[in-house]
Amino acid sequence: MKIILVRHAKAEHNFNKPDIKRKLSPKGKKDIRRNAGHLAKYLSTNDTIYCLTSSANRARQTAELIIEELEVLDFNIELSEDISLYHGDFDPVATQLSLMEQEDILIVVGHQPTMSYWAKELSDNYISFSTSEMACFEIEELSPIKAKFLWKIE
Picture 1 (cartoon, rainbow, N blue to C red):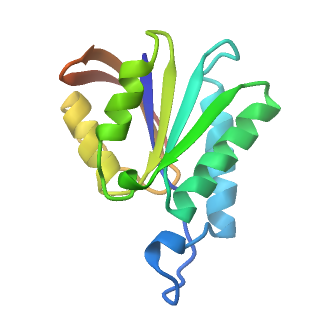
Picture 2: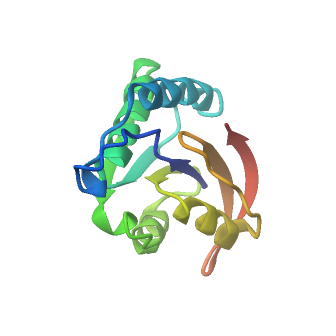
C-alpha cells in the first residue's frame, strides 16, 4: 500500500477572502497538471486509487485537477474530502489506510507544514514540500503507521 502526500498548488493572494476560500492561481493550475502527468508514470491503470483532500478550496481544486489529468489516461480515482485535514488532523488518513487493500494507493492533498510533519512521522525523513510537490511512501506497518520514502516529484 502506498500513500502519496501532495501539497496543494499555488493559490491566489487574496487577503479579502478567508484562507480556506482561496482558489488556485493560473500558475498553480499549470504546475499541478504538469506534476499529475509525471505522477501517471508511477501508477498503473489497474491500481485502486483513493484521493483524500482538505476542504480548503485550493486543496480541493488541486485534487480535482490531479484526478482530471489521470482520468484522461484511464485511471479511476475515488475522491473524498475532510475539513479536519485543513487543521492537520491525521485521523482521516489513518482511517482510510485501515480500509484499504495492500495494493491500493492513497493520494492525500493538504497543506504545509502538515505535509512535511506527516512525512517525518511516517518515515523519519524530513521532506520539504513546495506547492504542487508530491512524495510517495510505501506503508510498512499500520499500527503505528510507518512507511518507507520512495520518490518525490518537484
